Image (cartoon, rainbow, N blue to C red; front, side):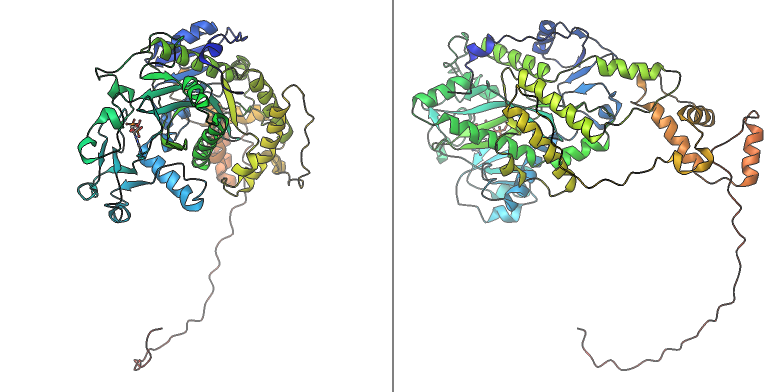
Length: 562
Ligand code: ADP
């Protein structure tokens, strides 16, 4: 196996990474393993929402939490990641893609969302076994197998064709938990962790028949269900990660290789499933992320650690069963612990969290005059992306990059044909070049683009206030605007921009000569320079218009409506 580490290799990896000033907020996580990793990294935990460089949260992030993020802060979820994590949303997104690309999106078992697709599903009755899942549950709760669909057609369920020929090891059905890090949404950056888990059912698998349909420990591989069975064997020795009902991913790959299967091909199929699944929501996630983004210096503030559940059928085809956007980091067994600890450690390292952006932000805040942060030019952005890529290549540890990779052109067809995305593709291609030659610093070859029309700055378009600098505007606006009601720690990122913007829009309202004069008198004799007074509008002139009158007459309609 060329690419995949064994569990032992992973555990012995040397991680050379020291960043002591980093603080993490763990107030909203119950998982001890995160704290243990933070101690390894020599970071500090803090309850402060302001001090921390990063939040780790067990549940998804709300819009409000996302908006309150300060520009230097990171959080372990993307707004909208439920679009993959909720069964009904995943079904909607992957069905949409399958409609457009039936061949490429056939890795997801045929799935229907009830009651909305009841008519389509009614025709399927009698064609096989279906697995019925509640829309929003997890850990196998409420899932059952059935042949009859009628009783459920008007209920809220996700119904899926049951894959009845799973690949078996020791006569048992199993599924694979693959950890995937979405590091950036635009440009898209996806990493797959080399180590993961294989969860086994505890009862020998028999093809579904009427009498065994209700056997959950035969048909469902959830750990939460099978660990309650008396047959469940816990793995207590990490040196033997191929025994028991929860094993390491690498031990299953090793087994498959020993059986003569092409594991490299299987891994590349799994990578493709991962990328195409994320691509199905990329435009939506990107839109949500960008529409509220407060960061200007290129740091991706959100990342996500997904758990992809993959079932192998007897032909070794990987099927995507579901995506977890809040996977469990419980560490019940030593095997769990070693895998999850390494996973979290490598994730936090790959994020490349530094103190400098925080320092810059605080310096800006403390400065006597507010300076609007400079937006990066396209060249600077590309340079920065390449610096990120160089860092990533050096700090992959247990991760492998799955996007962008050598299949970039194949994946491009699933991207929406927007110019914006095309521009990103140029950057991604450069990124890929770096990935191929990690040691070389390539000189950027930016494609010659037509020169963009320079958008003039709003302030300099008006001759009468070209003299104003940021300071004058800020002083002026702070004086005329209601004081802020939030305490500093509650302030939204770049609250001062909001302060500038609000009055800017307020004062954009034209002021007539006399109003201008009044304002100047009432504002402590300080001259109001912006906005300049405008002329009174001319008085309306009334004209006589000729009005024509018409009369109507009823006529017989003999023609038919076309
Ligand atoms: P949950 O979020 O509740 O775990 P899943 O969709 O992962 O729900 O399903 C639970 C288990 O049921 C899976 O781990 C797998 O063993 C089995 N399963 C789910 N869907 C299918 C399917 N289409 N074919 C075969 N087995 C399935």
